[in-house]
Image (cartoon, rainbow, N blue to C red):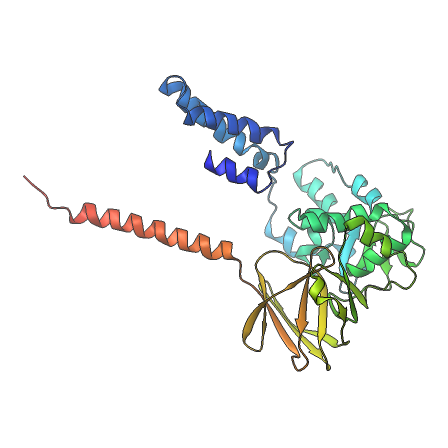
Length: 339
């Protein structure tokens, strides 16, 4: 029940009916209702319903060559950058069927959808590849419901290089036309993942800030939204270059003078810190949920490190439990034996 309470505090979806069934069964078990047989039936039912969402997501695993061999379609997208699926393409790709599992997965791979770019040096830019972070969901979904000007600004800011599927934008270069099975077009004006801006505006409400993007003078390469009012104002432009990237770190070089604000289209997921001149500092949260770094006049390099407290807490808890088990085993083994 304590675990279910934490799940509620941390935001379990209210429409997840299996959660509530499992919660009620766990509550009935903890209240010792009925006979021992009934109580254990409650516990077994709670366990089954708690894993039901995971059971729904079970996938078949193909042979190793399936994952190591890139799809032929990848050759049509030689530039680095993110891939975005238009909504007509998402609807078209909801269901795949074939003569068998292998045939179905080959069709799936040929359409180049749903996380495949992550395996071949590309990045997919859509909400289901981002752990359902609420901020990223809004950027990738809600913003497309506004004007073409806003949508274009969003695609540029999110560093979208290619769009799969039909769309209404006129300034894209079509690689495969809309009437073909897998239409793909290239965005000619994407921003890099990290860059420097010259001004920070106060972050207000989501829709209000989206509307500001319709101003002809609005340019994400020069302006960002900052949630901290004390850090608003003008900044010096730096020449930003990504020197190194690992799964847990990003090293940036920003050449220039004056105080600078580096912004990115990478999510401000909890646990990221910035190391500048040997000391750690908190990142800025800019543009409603993305990472930013402030650099002083003579600071030209920053290393972003992923050091989540949850990992250290989990590691400590695991070591503590292992220590307790080791102590219990030693106690039993060293206990004096009596005739």
